[in-house]
Image (cartoon, rainbow, N blue to C red; front, side, top):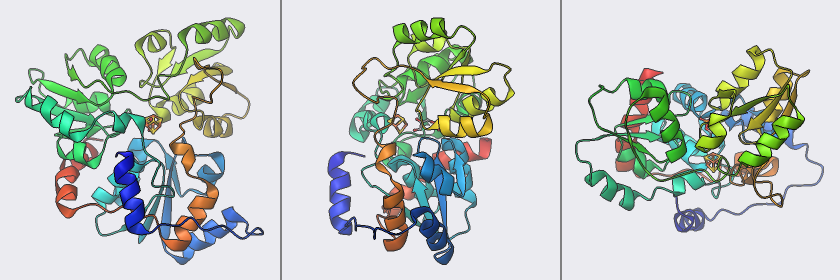
Length: 329
Ligand code: 13P
Ligand code: SF4
């Protein structure tokens, strides 16, 4: 979703961020409001720890989409980024879906504008379009099937071997999957600024300082990083790996938010965020994810805003490839 569209939607909603009274215990107030309004909070592992701790469901993109499909509550508050809340709305058109900060976009989703993608698709008329869930509803509506980093391999393998495939929007995940599945897919040239920020040289130097630490990485990272990783996997894949693996310490190349749950699940292990190229920024934090705060989550439940609103026609088209994916895994 572009900044312009987000601003328009904000204006339409007349959304005002109200200040919170000083003595409110935000976590407690959120839990009470949630009960009172029959709301459920879905949170991604990249949210700030305090948000993760008040969530009903905490997980990666696939788990959250699966939970969204089963929700019975009247209101879904999606503590994540726009495309995630949009996905929840698409599969729950009659429910109210809220996102604490509508500006919580995604560099990867933004790297695939619908009109450009439509033209790209037209160059390959016989190709099946598999899109990573990190894209706008408009891109999903142009797709045959959606996938996440947890199930991309299964989704690709569900397509007949001789079928031409377009994979979008993440080229890094695409290159990784080409190697994994030996399928020669046509890739869209998009990327995530967070997962591309890791520095190969600094990771190598850090690994030398911690010779017993294993290096683990998310497949949205660039090939040189993935090639030296002991394990490559989705956010929940990484979380599972550190729980079953015997090492005592890990250098982790993904958004740092996941370290909160890793540390909870493995209190005796050491987790070190992988270093980024630019020392002056906290680039392994997704600035979009971190736009959501406990205060905004509280206000969001209080005022039931900002709400995700989508045209019914768009919902109908975008729902098909999402449900196709959810039927696979
Ligand atoms: P997963 O949740 O599939 O690991 O994707 C990571 C991500 O970048 C979400 O925006
Ligand atoms: Fe998008 Fe990357 Fe942030 Fe995930 S981590 S929401 S892919 S910018």
